[in-house]
Image (cartoon, rainbow, N blue to C red; front, side, top):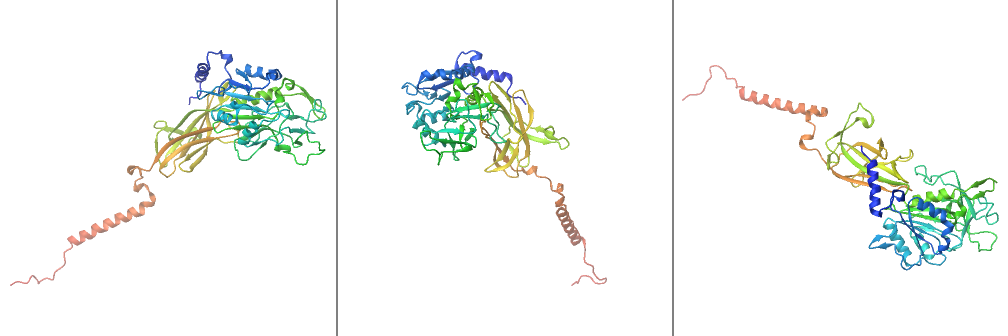
Length: 480
């Protein structure tokens, strides 16, 4: 089956050229959703602190626009369309972000498929607008705006020998066996003066990227008490980097330590309590976080979706025994038909489409449903192209006529949502499609009974008509 060919990929990139202007091929952003990034930074003098991060983004083809959140001319939309594709929000010095970056405007930006990378810092009190936005998404911050996370057993002994507020954590692994990891590695991440986040249970679209160790806790450094009696969160309750992927697959990431993006911590020397000295992997982690947030990784694309009537050869195993009957994607099937469903999926990763691979602990499923699913079946990979995988399954339509739908609803953390629905009609047997009575062995007794009855009736009529009563000799009819 044909998939995303090289020509199709080239046409896709040419479409980006036509949309965003006459850029060179090297200047095309790797993001599948656009290249325009708004960086909201209040003090432009701090741009140099993150110059390595900006250079990495520009090297990946992004066009950066630095604006103050207080700029009255700043607008996220123009003539009903997004002016920017992505937003990076750095912690402001003041208490607000301005009218253009209000919670409602930012939520509208997400609803229109925009992506946001929000950074926090314990040195900059979180504005009320940001706290309100996070509460809308069920992400909770400490009530006192200057709280930070400390860990007395997992900190950098070089830069935070006394305060223990520079956390040293390994790059995160997958949160579940059936979830892909886009942020893994063997390096150490340094998070200076991080702000704790606690994820609620009412938003199923939230997922933690990086959690604190079990010995970490959040506290207010202005509190002069010798011990912390009621911390905001402790241990793995603390999410240091959080993510949310909306129903429209727009992405929102919260980085609890903006200092982790500074040049100082890119490839810095750190040392833990074990005395081992190593270089930080902050640069690689920053690339992973920004790549995922800006739709460079974990983007699933649907190719062809086909279904057809099938004939199954029982002597051949697997998909090779399935033979297509009729044309593709008919609008109507009959009950108890053998039907095959195929879907082609690709994964966009940085600069290319590649075949989608489902983890062994995960499953891509098809539902054949009316009001509720009559079948829920695993889709198995049956063929591959250079940039796509074809998943397929064959099943028998249920003995129920009505309007049915093929549904593929694949939603996993850190992967864009796949929602495919194709409606078909399932009819009952036509009068000439039922099996003949003599083909049903269970009806032979009743068929025999019918013919015995008929034979008996014919015999009775023949006997009745051709059997004359006997008369005695010498007796005849009485005469006058």
